[in-house]
Amino acid sequence: MAKHKHTEVKVQIAIAQFLAWNEDSAIWTYFAVPNGELRDKVAAAKIKAMGGRAGVSDIVIDHKGRITYVEVKTDDGQMSKPQESWAFNCRKRGVEYHIVRSVDDMEGVLKHLGIPIKAKISA
Image 1 (cartoon, rainbow, N blue to C red):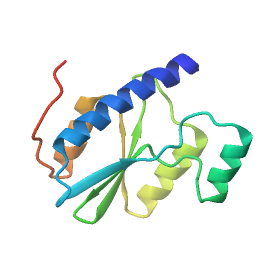
Image 2: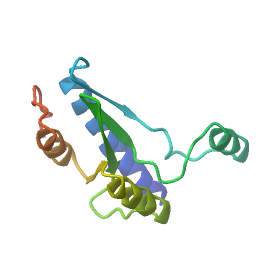
Image 3: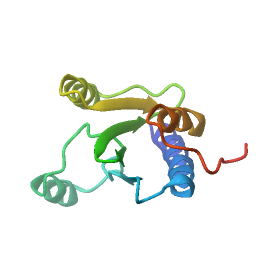
Image 4: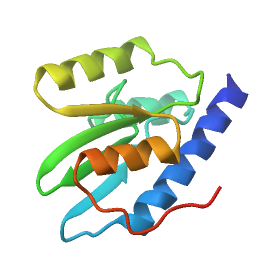
């Protein structure tokens, strides 16, 4: 699992770089939710007490006041039960929720949201 997580981190870092290059904070912005890393029990309890929730997506996009949740996975990565529940409830509330596995997938989400692409990451 550690290798899988490490690869997912690399994918998310590449996506974050792509988002940073394309961000226009007057129109849209994003942030990452730091839920995925392992923590000791004290830190985990503190985050939970502060409102941290299992299953929350990795990235949140705000485009003109409309929120979109994005979960980052590797090509073969599967969602956990809390992530599935979060996705289900987001969609039930009418909030957009996407799973991306690459920068290309993230570009597709931005295009879907009507966000222009200013820069790309070369392969």
